[in-house]
Image 1 (cartoon, helix red, strand yellow):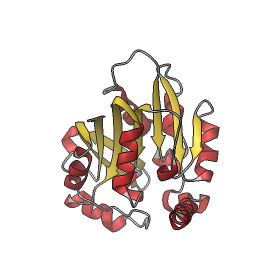
Image 2 (cartoon, rainbow, N blue to C red):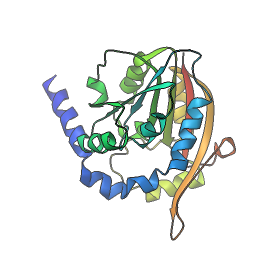
Image 3 (spheres, rainbow, N blue to C red):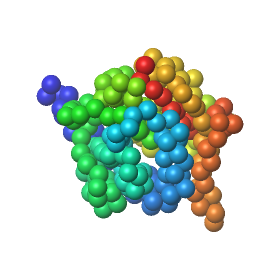
Image 4 (cartoon, rainbow, N blue to C red):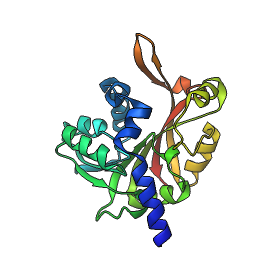
Length: 227
């Protein structure tokens, strides 16, 4: 237990201000409103059928841009968790109505379940993948929804992405078939959409999401329901 706690602490200490600046620079430029709205729209297209407010948890919420977008929607209660205390400090500036936790997911024990859980570009960082997916499953309400974006490293664009990827915390550089099989063991996949994203000189960051890109994009957006 002590060794596990030490490993968790070391993992949490990786994602400092220096980490974010080194690998992502101005994070807001790589998470523009248009990109975050595509994630919001994907969530709204597959909402669980309940009349009350829906509790939505963003795992690895980073700077809180996605949650700040949802705060304007009356149908959601917003929650965020991240291992980075720096990221949560920034997130609180953007999403003042959201409840945040600085926690490693393995030790995260909230006193509630959630109708929706999101993990956008998070799972590739987490070593113990099966344990995390079980935790997400357990944290979801019956008929709860799980939305996830992961980078994929097969195909032409995936191969290029692998060469350009210098983030050593990406411990899962896997193919799209790997993620489909992994998620299918606990969830029913409702929809899959491919994503092409790249920062172009002069033009800046571009992000395109479409079902036509499922077999070609260097990332994939999954919409799932608790099995």
